[in-house]
Image 1 (cartoon, rainbow, N blue to C red):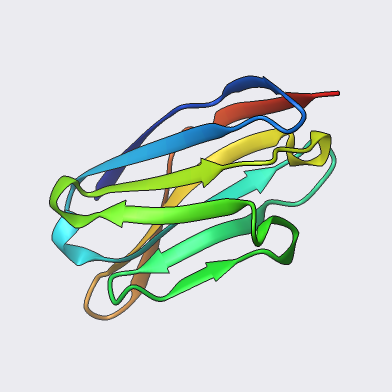
Image 2 (image 1 turned 60 degrees about the vertical axis):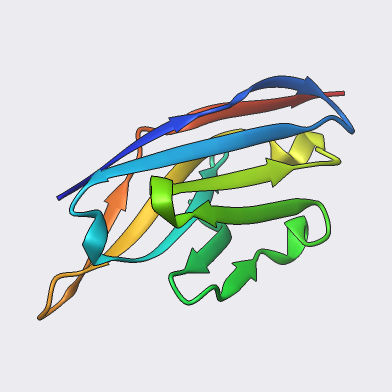
Length: 119
């Protein structure tokens, strides 16, 4: 099992910045990817950014050029630097990891952190 603890959400004005952090504990040796998803009211949860242990990175088109994902492997922590925030970025942001259980892959989720961007 992997436990995820998120921090860094909050209220910011349009154009502002926030940095989310997610620290993993437990079976961190099994982690093969970490990332961030978000879910706004009435919407499905969507991928924001992800990074594999090999350093492959993926971003949603809507955040490319504004958000940057990074990982500190020694601290088992993933970060999401969010610049140029827009009201449509308002959502609950969830940290996600995928672990290799040998026979199958497992998904783990954080509790979520609210990001609100005001006009």
